[in-house]
Amino acid sequence: MGDAGIIGPAVAGFALGFSLIMAIGAQNAFVLRQGLRGEYVLPLVLTCALSDAILITLGVAGFGVLIASNPWALDLVRYAGAAFLFVYGAMNFRAAMTGGEALDEKGRTVGSLGAAVTTCLLLTWANPHVYLDTVVLLGGISAQYTPAWAFGIGAVVASFTFFFMLGFGARLLRPLFTNPRAWQVLDVLVGLTMWAIAAKLVFGM
Image 1 (tube, rainbow, N blue to C red):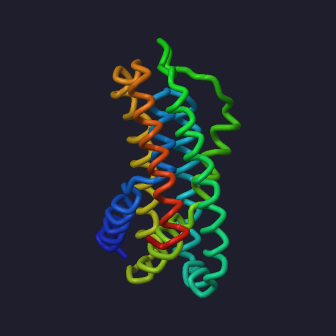
Image 2 (spheres, rainbow, N blue to C red):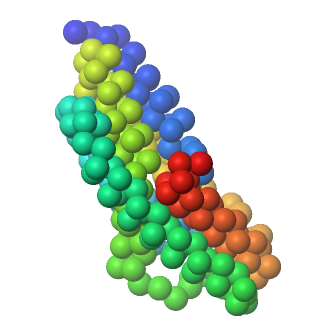
């Protein structure tokens, strides 16, 4: 099979993967916030992108069909994810009410790398939409392309591209967030996003 037979599926995988991951969600909001802080950006974008790569690979390998046939597994993740998002959203509302946060000259805030990565992992792996988009949807559609692995590689590249753009591109907005009021607005928006996703997970809105 020539390069032309590989490029087509790869481009299709990149386009679909990028369009799916662009949707505003808890994971993206967290990476954006850390990017604005300039805090642990590289480990976090790698955590997100590598997680997607693992899930996409599982989907392309055929696990999407297996998960789709066991809805109880998705239900378990759905309710656990909703509970976590509700708590995380409440933390953002509390931060907005407290106020006073702003970037210092180096853009650093208090927090550990372990805590940041753990939060990122929870926002990623406790979100059933991640499984639906990567394992089920991308995995299922990849079966329509030959070779399927080329489609999967395209989707993985899309994930790395998006998260690096989001994490490191956020620094362009940093001057705005030297104002504590801007952080309060962001915290409210992130909190609303978390609660909206949690409600959608529980009530299917």
